[in-house]
Length: 143
Image (tube, rainbow, N blue to C red; front, side, top):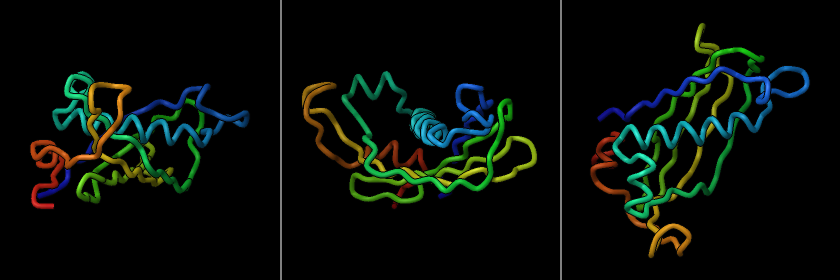
């Protein structure tokens, strides 16, 4: 089964740039976070459902390799998929490219843990296996 590929487009705004007008590196991390939440939402677990069912997916590690810099006004696309699945942890791989021309701008990953709040948001989190329907939708059946 092929993993679900998420795609999120962004137009680089002035506030996401450094004084030279090129992307400020934390922007990539915000984009990767957005891409992960969008990927999970596209698999049936939107933010409202996550809150209602007391799910969370805290970030435990993130890394990014900066390859090339876009500038103010450039349209970029973040492409994401789950590359590894553990008992309750999973890794999302991201590639940021120019929307036109496919030039690679950055490659990164996030490691997260699937959790549930014991008694609602703000209470203690406990790791648990990712639901089978989400695993399947992400292309992880049998993983």
